Structure formats: structure tokens, C-alpha cells
Image (tube, rainbow, N blue to C red; front, top):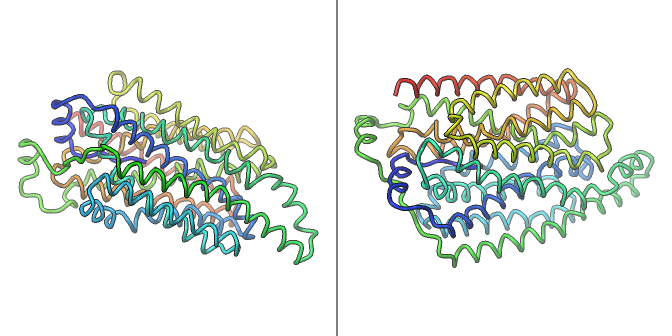
Length: 431
């Protein structure tokens, strides 16, 4: 996940000098971490559903606990960064994530779902700090019209990690899960408890490794040569345009962007986090379905590559937003009206449809905010909480109807995103 900062800073930085390689490598590594930790949820949902004996809606509390932290922690994250600066803030975010990973150990030993959820919330809180600190570095490196291209490059790092994460964790936690699920029905209470305790314990070693990696990275970043940056400057034209404005609510296009971001993150999380369970719904073994999230993320990587090649020379950010939102509508409807592997494939292909939406919304929503940019960025970070709310609604609809019918919730989300892209095109034509 990424943010964009003020156009004035972008333009001034571009004129000043070309970006240094070392900071880019560091930020790319952080985006890799974002992706790896975030997309573990796609495996944790079916894994914890079995281990903690959950319903569909209960299992999607995994996504809720993780993403709701963006809503709760967005403003506190800004306070932390103001106090610590960006580099120390990144280290602090990694340490906070480590605390969340550590909490998985007692959660697994006691097989307590609430402890898992608290650990996920704390990991999300650490990621919120990291997002607020890391994103300015990538967005100040060039002109505003190519911001989506730079964010796409970071997105490749993010989703490459995300494509690896579910395979790695799934190989440990979901090994022989299909056979275990079939056996549980015929076991005595004592046998079932022992088997589920053993299943829950599978997560301990992976999260101890994650904890160690996070702490090592926190130390490396703390002692790195990553420079501090100033995001409070605005040029004279932007200052003049915003003269007399006293509230972030005086920027209606930003508010629309926040709504679009909320809906987008919801459908992005659904595409990656529901596809494994959806495959199982169609009778596909979990041993095979655990690879489906990786397929979704590979689709996102392909979309990012399109962005890197075509934006802004051949494709504007506004047209990318409209086009990929329409692809999302088509793929969702196709998934609803097909079945089996074909239907699951269309859900996986939503990764491609989602790829350029996030990179396009940030610069479009923050365009012209000037001194209000940090407030706008905070609102957009809070909107990532859509990843908590939309999947939870999907889980409830799945319990009431079925997993396939519940995907209808995605269609109006993509339609609003398309409308926002249309409004952005009209706004650009006037300027």
C-alpha cells in the first residue's frame, strides 16, 4: 500500500536532482515487507477457520482486525512521525509489527482466536506507521503525472512478496488440511482437541522467523543513511489557489477519493483473501487452492508492469483508473455466472483489474492540496480500513446466501471507482 505527497514537493525534488539509488532500495525492501505480512492473511483465514472452529463471517474477522488498525492508527502514526522523524519512525513501525508477530505464539499455544486478532491488529498498526513514513520517499522522486508509475514499481516489490507469502505459510499451516477436516467429524472431543491444538502450533515457527526478520530490519534501518525529508513546503501557485481555505473538508474531490480508496481496498483484499476459501467452496482441495492468492498477486504484478511501461506516455492516470475499474466489473460478473475453476480464475484475475487503481487514486486525490496534503494523506490511510469492512460484509452475505452470490457486493464498488476516474478526467480537462 502506498501514499502520495504534495505536488510542490514532487516538482521541486525533480528539479533539484535525480533520486539516489540507496534510498530507493531501502524503500523497495520495506514495500516487500508490506506485501509479505499483508498477504499472509489469505492463508490465515482458512487456517484459523479450521483451527479455531469458525464460521465464514467469524473467519473474516482476520481481515477486519488487520485493516481496522489503519482507521484507528492513521492519526497517531502522523504524531509518531512528527516526534521521531521518518527514519526512526520506520524502525518503530517494524518493532511494533514484531510485537504483533510475537503475540501469535501464546495465541497458538492456547488456540485463542482473540489473541490472534489482537496480534493482527498490532501488526496492522506497525504497518500504518511504515506506510505513513515510506510513501513520501517514493512520491517525491518525479513529476505528479508519473506518480502512478513510481508507485507501480513499488507495487511490484509489494506483490512479489505477497505472491511468495501464502505459498510459504500455506505449505506449513495447510499441509494435509483437507484430510484433517474430513477426519474431524468422526473424532471424539479429546481427539479433536489434540488435533486442533497441533494444527494451531504449526504457526509458531513461521512467526518466530518473521519476528526475527522484522527486528533485524528495524536495526538496519535505524542505522542506515536514509535521509530525512520535508513534506510541508508548497509553491506559490498552490498556496494562492488554497488561500482562504481552512479545512480539509473544503476539498470535495479528496473526499470522493477517500470513498474510492475505501471501496478499492475492500475489493482488493477480497480478491486475495477470499479466493482460497472460494476454491474450496467449488470442491478444489486446499492443497491446490493455497496457490490461488499467488495467482491473484501475479496478476497485480502484470498490471503494475503495464503501468510502468504505459503511464504517463501512453496512458493517463485517469484513463487507467476508469479502464481497470471496468475490467473489475466484467471479471466479477463473469465469476458470478460461471462455476468451478473458471469462476475461481475470474476472482484471481481481479488482481490484474485492481493493480492500477491504488496507484492512480493517490496522486489524483491529493492533487492541489498544498499545505493540506498531510491531512489528506491521513484520510487516505484511514480509508484502507475498507479492507476490514467490505470482506466482513462479504462473509456475512456468504453465511446468508453462498460464497458466490456474495461477490455481488464488489460490483457497485468498482462502479464508484469508475465514476471517480470519470470525474478526474473532467477535472483534468478543465485545468
